[in-house]
Amino acid sequence: MFRDTVNNLLEDALEEREDLFLISLDVLPDNTIKIIIDGDKGVLVEDCIFVSRAIEHNLDREEQDFSLEVLSAGATEPLVSTRQYMKNIGRTLSVKTKDNETIEGALTQVNEDRILLEWKAREPKPIGKGKVTVKKEAEIAYDAISKAQVVIKF
Image (cartoon, rainbow, N blue to C red):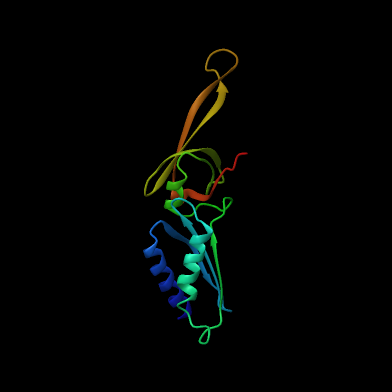
């Protein structure tokens, strides 16, 4: 019942702010609420405060004691939502498939059921000695991805 109330309040807040979306909601047995959000243009501290207040101000501490934590999805967190893939088009991703293959490349396309990564590789020339740079690409279905992360480069 408490989780349903929190979920409804969260849905209302996210309807009001359509640029934000939910990554995860955990309500532990001791009424610790942990919410992770992301946004189409990133998440500011003010966005976390907005979501926190939308929930906290509508729950009665006299009725239920709780703690609330609202976080943004960190740069090192795996991607879990299609909207996260959309906002990262053009960035380099490291994708581990369920076949235990790891592919690193630029995210160039996203649709409802798959992503497209592109990268360059050095391969032996078909004739003669030496290597040649070739453009490679991989289309990967979401259900084949076990983990995908943005590669942070400095």
